[in-house]
Image (cartoon, rainbow, N blue to C red; front, side):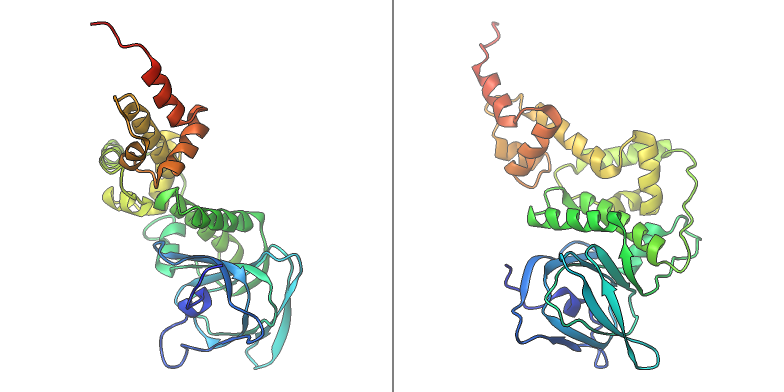
Length: 314
């Protein structure tokens, strides 16, 4: 259990006199947050056991998603336009979505287990807008969305956070992009129009992207940064990149890091922790896990086997 001062619901509230602070917590339920990640660009994540009794006339800065991961259904009481409250039942795996700036009042007097996420609306628009001149996808408040893809993405984000984000920002952005498209499909006022692929990256864009990946393998590269460097939207860049290389950017980046690490292991007296850092992995454990998955053996075995090899005669 994490020792936190603010929960995601509180963090997401608009910080003004009319909205901030209108979250009511239960005195009989302790604050139980098991995962919390507020440092990812444009996306926040939290999981735990609910101790919030009500949110009163509050608006969020970001689009908000809450997923019931408890074995039992939960009941929300949602305030309507006429001031009356209606009951909404969310079974296990069901989510509800509240767009940014949407004023909402909800009562939820239940200590259910949850996963909560929020996405910056500017980031969301970049992810789901097919072309620069396309109309943005507007979200509507929605209850009871049961989509396995949303649950899978939420679970992957929790696992990534618990592991210390070994996949880096590119992996988180890939998940955030998938989540954004699921929200647009299932809580959008209109369905997003996907751009028809017009081939892959141009020669110039392909060369620039590869140069950046090679030069910054040891840093936390993001899809948004790569896209901006070749003057494309992140969504367009990701699709064109996959069309060109057969892999999404984060998977291709992982491939490059593993190849660099494999070459570095050939060096005499290679140190695994140093190889992991210079190849852009979070730590040695992260490096070892992905290396074994790709090549079938651990990097430690590779190093030890090469040190046992007899020297090449001169």
